[in-house]
Image 1 (spheres, rainbow, N blue to C red):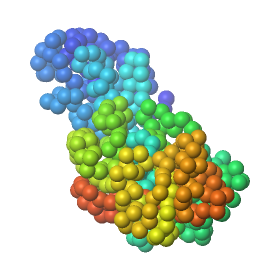
Image 2: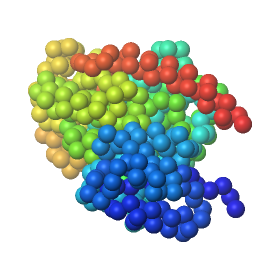
Image 3: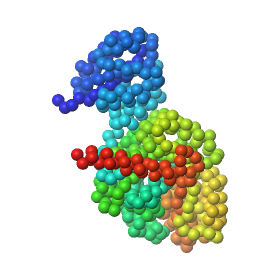
Image 4: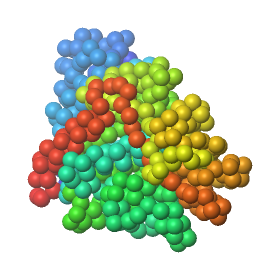
Length: 461
């Protein structure tokens, strides 16, 4: 018989000790593939005596804690016994849905399985295949600024003397992993339109990051995402194997898509959330899983008018993972060409309020242009077309992010009208937290380098 899975069980005081004893003994007989090694008492006193009486009655060691729910005790006991699975024999009212998700997130973050009588979660089964130092960049939602932070991470790594490769799996990615050597290419409207004319998504993040950051990227694809973040289908694994073989690359960044978690073992992790991320997405369900997995948590859109929301999010993530560094940033536009003295039509995915209150004044003050009209609808093609028809004729220049319909709709229309096209980058600017975004990324990179030295020994075995 193959090696048995080592299991710890969760129990509570709403069950008589004799019932708990019977349930554990029943499990020992009916789960022959498992070895039950310990129990963690969750709480409740209605039907039990003293802790010592419980310990004497049950056939496995029992651990108690003053914490409720005793998440850190569960993790500590699981590690001590080398557990593979945490089996929940508890019930309402000790564990409600919210507390069960808190436990599930913590258990899955340790690479363990969490299950009960009618549910089973994880583990995520991350593959240890990267032969180079690697960082994953995860997000809690779409449009949180993950691409901006991933790109800035890559540029920072490049400044540190490495050549990074960003692996980006999108819902519109290529059928086979596509390598782009951004430092060999020139970012022009004609080049992006030639990509679109081949039937490819020219505004895909892997093209943007390669061309803007002058780095190597690999475009991949994924479909679906589980509750804990596992993609249903992804070519990220193939992309990592391809990155392993690129001699010019000596550092890998694997960027999640939406809320999915790249299924690859990395040496460090960054998590990007925004001021608009609902608090319960951080504190409930499987938000805490991502927080616990992270070395650096970047809160974007941390504008002054979002201060209360940002402070709530900061407090929440520090409560879940006090070891992680937290940095608060705002994203500011950086035209990749000269717009001074020009009339600009601006196209972005940012919220209307942010464009009007912050982005337009910033562009006009710092780059000397005049924004004559704008569209916040790069991701809404019909509305984008309406905005372009209204505002582009008044402008000299289309200034646009490389996202969504920026190429096949916005760029194509600007070229048709004979307008100049200048692309836009988003730069994170630190406004609070433990340290600057540059310092924080350097710390993550150095952690990854140190941890890789240990992990590489496992890969070579």
